[in-house]
Image (cartoon, rainbow, N blue to C red; front, side, top):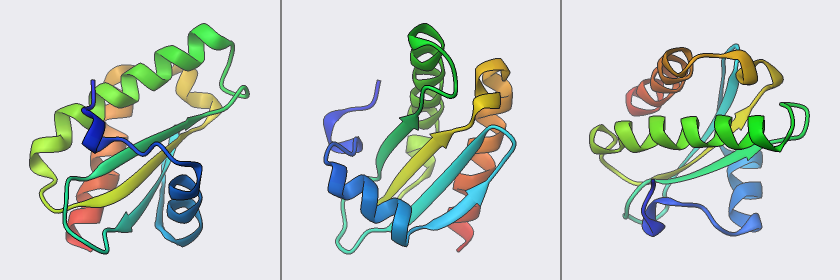
Length: 112
């Protein structure tokens, strides 16, 4: 589970990241990254709509994405806001597929 300082909680923060952040699209997710104005820990937010599936499926996808982000947290370094939007194909994706896709986008963030 992600600690409180590593979570986006306000709707305005989500909106700012999605509107002004850099976009990295994959087969199962779309990742939006916005560099932090001030230092601090990286913060993550997740958007999993009803198009992904029922409540059980959505929560499973969200838990998988949170676990992927928690694993990659030590290697991220500087702060920033990251929102991951799950696409309908994420429901049938394995944990490894989600991890590879999100890791690719987060590595691209580090290079930018």
